[in-house]
Structures are given as C-alpha cells and as structure tokens.
Length: 168
Image (cartoon, rainbow, N blue to C red; front, side):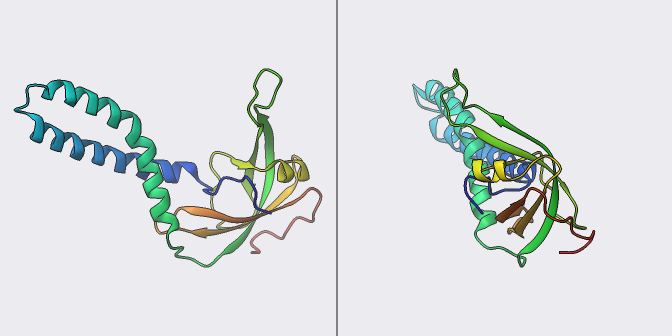
C-alpha cells in the first residue's frame, strides 16, 4: 500500500546533488545580478536583497529540480526487496502539537543488493500500525535517472515469514 510514504528511499542521495545544483545556480545568478546592477545607484541594496532571497529559496528549489529530473524516467525495472523493521517512532500529533502525526520506520535490508533506506522512511499511519519492530516490510523500488532509489510500493507484514537471504 502506498499512502503518505516518502518517495525517495535515500534522502542523502537526493539532497547532495540538489544542494550542489543550488550552489551552482546561486553563483550563476549572483554573477548575473552583479554584472547587470554594478552601475546602478541602488545596486548594492538590490544585491543584498537578491543574496537573501536566493539563499533561502535555492536549496529547496535545487533539491526539487533534482527530484523531478531523477523521477522523470526510471532507468531500471522494478525490484522487490525485504527489510526488517529495526525501529519505529512517531512525531507530532500530541495535545500541545496540533500538527498531524508523522510515522517513521528504520529499516535494515534483508535482500542482497537492496537499496539503502537512509536515514529512515516516513510511512502512512496504516502501514505504521500494520508492522511492529522486528517485522518484515517488502519494498518495490526503481532507480531514477541519477541512480536514486524511488519507492513504488510498500507492503507490510507484522509476522510474515522471513524470506531466504538473496531472494528477490
């Protein structure tokens, strides 16, 4: 079942190229701004404002651009891998915190060559309550253009049989 799960299995593999892209865009855009505004009487003020706006907006924009580019075309066939739940926790949703609860699982791969789930996987409430610590989760994933693993389907099993090591 795929509900509120995060789509990227390895967040660090997505964030690293996204931040590198954002840094390049920042240098390029600031260079253009300086080039076009260097003779302006209000140029320094506009450069400082541009620096502030780009500093806040480009990191998230860069990560989103890399995410969209990577998901545009999958480069591998779907693969099935099994993971053991080694930890689970919730955030938010308490009396003081009025936001909706978020559910997380820490997973350890059981299949050989399984994509790394790093650092954890955010899942829907239904999937969170279907599996306990020590349970088995089956993840169907595909590699995107930049070799970033993306979640296609998640199936939980609280007491399902453990697959033989190496089977897909």
